[in-house]
Amino acid sequence: MPKRAGFRPPGVKPWTKIGPLGPFRGRLGLGWVIAPLVVGAVLVFFGWLFLFRSTPPTGTFVPVGPVSSFPENQARRVDVPGVWVARSGDRFFAVEQEDGCSLTFCRDRFVDCRGVAYGIDGLGSGGGLDVLPVRVYKGVVYVDPDHPLDRTPAPGPSSAASCP
Image (tube, rainbow, N blue to C red; front, side, top):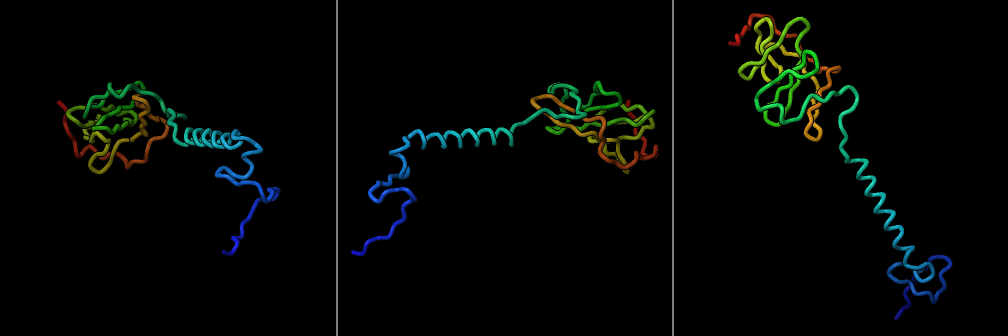
């Protein structure tokens, strides 16, 4: 039977037994095997925390109220001047009225001072309201009034709608 060639790390004597944890287990002790495993687990934990933790919105986001204060398919004015927040299912929409033109909400739509109707998402026929970014964090709705999303200009009063 031919002798099998093998490789031993430098400094290991030919008669040293190489076990499942390596050749140096006997000299260094089991702690040297367990310690890197513990350090690796701690690094994985903090890496996961850093990558996947959720934080409240920062910057110019403003809390406007708990999720429960926004009923389904309804909208209400919030503490930010000229801003309305609407809810449709699990989605939230924040719209901002045009300067000098008041906005009201009736029967699942917005109506501005000219009588133009907009959907709950701020879209109207041929145009729309300024829609603001909305985030929900731990049951609180946040709105960013300083960075409206781009929208086309509001339509003229030709598509007038009434709100009794």
